[in-house]
Length: 53
Image (cartoon, rainbow, N blue to C red):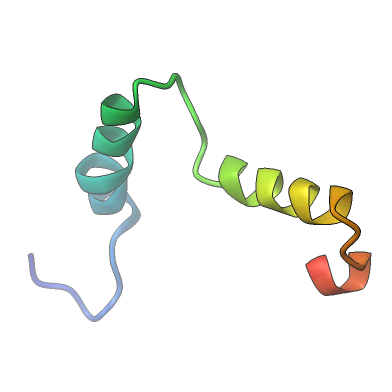
């Protein structure tokens, strides 16, 4: 694959994301779901909201 230095979204989704979800045997997970979950865990653990933002 020849690019200008960035990883195309479709390549990442089909080559990395979907195979990882299949291997983990979990259902549909959007790419930003882990980010939101992590932020919730940080806040639940007492992290400052401004730092998490």
